Image (cartoon, rainbow, N blue to C red; front, top):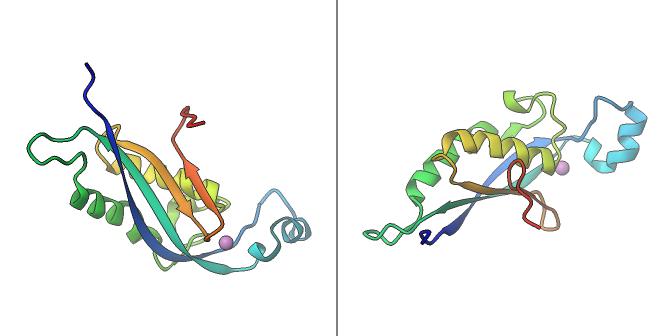
Length: 142
Ligand code: NI
């Protein structure tokens, strides 16, 4: 019988500036498409990181929360907090900083740093109304 699997989600926050601009489009098209998001502005982002594991029989815990905290801080938050996401973050250079693209990029940054195979979901909460979720390649949660 397969061991019980649990998922655990921890929420982190960071503040950063960005603007939406596609290099494939001209200025007028960008302005039309992205509206106010074409202008430089900032967000107080939340990032929800979900990891999976089996409950340790001794500790009763499925994930090392302190380890998750320090890993996410080192591998992600330290690189993006109080930065211009369009210019200050090397891995994002050339990326349109939509919530979708941020979620995918953050997934890649975290997957390298977290215990192998444990990452299940990265959600970028850009505003109270907009949350962008990424589950990795080839995984369709629907
Ligand atoms: Ni924005």
